[in-house]
Amino acid sequence: KQEVTQIPAALSVPEGENLVLNCSFTDSAIYNLQWFRQDPGKGLTSLLLIQSSQREQTSGRLNASLDKSSGRSTLYIAASQPGDSATYLCAVRGGGGKLIFGQGTELSVKP
Amino acid sequence: DVKVTQSSRYLVKRTGEKVFLECVQDMDHENMFWYRQDPGLGLRLIYFSYDVKMKEKGDIPEGYSVSREKKERFSLILESASTNQTSMYLCASSSGGLAMIEQFFGPGTRLTVL
Image 1 (tube, rainbow over the protein chains, first blue to last red):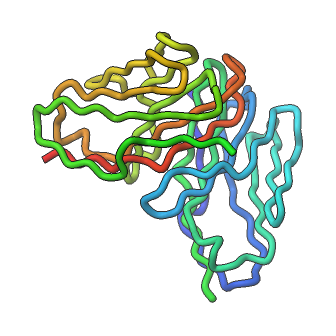
Image 2: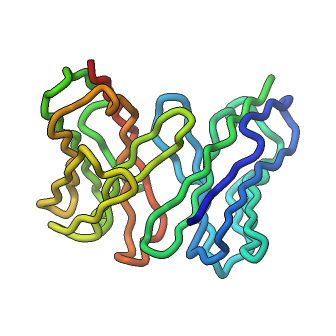
């Protein structure tokens, strides 16, 4: 059974710092991996989608990498800003089409 | 941009009531999903649908049913609401048929059952 783990559960950094969020999964047979952002009390916003054949995807200050063989993905945020404060979730899609989510990392960027 | 809308942001119902949560997407996506999100448990899939009138059980379908009569609309039904169904409910959609590519989420409905 696929399990997705995100460490740390919470992270606080000063503004301007570069940071890395981690996501690991137990079954490497995935179709894709998706990173989301969730603001308190709101829905999920899709940030990046990496197909299983890809190694990384970039969007603005965000870069996501995927190492399928080791069951790991990282989300790199450059030059963090207070507006980046949110919970970041990763999810993997395996057979059957279902997304399996991690518990999320709650990020706080202090001015 | 894909837009997924949910009928209510906040809903308060009484135990035993029948509750309908509506979700509409405007991008002609084949697939639609209902999740619930609870602290410490994360997001869990309740039901999904990959075509009109088709539905598949997710991980926690008990106490719920769904309806998909039109491609753009996916309804979640709580036949007899109970307090343990108090939660945040999130709807999502994706294209790609069974390939199920990127999922896009609605704003969520926070349901409280008293």
